[in-house]
Amino acid sequence: MPSFEGRDVADIALRNFIYASAETSLFDVARLMASARIRHLVLVDGDRLAGVLSYRDVQDFAAGRARGAGTSDALRASRAAELMRRDPITAAPGMTLREAARRMLAHRVGCLPVVEGAPPDARVVAVLTESDLLRAAFRLEA
Image 1: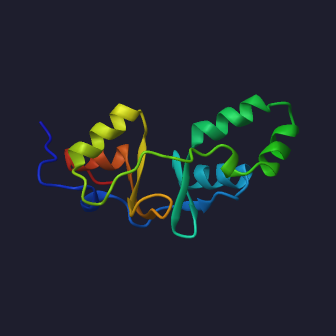
Image 2: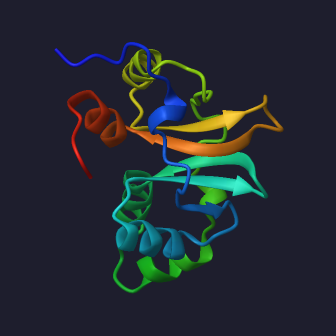
C-alpha cells in the first residue's frame, strides 16, 4: 500500500503553477484552462489568494448561457470573480500529504492552493492537485 509517511505538501506541490487574476474574463479563463489542460485555476490578487475556479464551474456557466453566439459574448463579459470560490480549502506547506489527501476527500475538492499566512493576506506559494497526490503515492512520472 502506498505511504505518505514522512512527506509533506511542500515536497510535491507545484511551485510553478498557472494562475490568473480574478478580473480575467471567463472566456480567457476557459481558453487558458483548456490550453494548459488543467481542471482548477488559482485566482490571485497580487500574490494573495483571491479564490479558485474549476473548469466545471466555467462549463456549467456556459451551458446555462448556451444560446448560440450569445455564449461567447457572455463568457467575454463575465469575470472569474463572479464564479470563483472566495474561501477555498487550502493547505500549508508543512501539512502532511496524508492530511492534505483527507482534506481534499472530506471537502470534495480536486486541488488545494498552498498558502503561507492567514486570510486575507494568505500568499499562494504552490498548488497541490489530486494528480500530484497520485503520482507521489505510486511514484509515477508526469
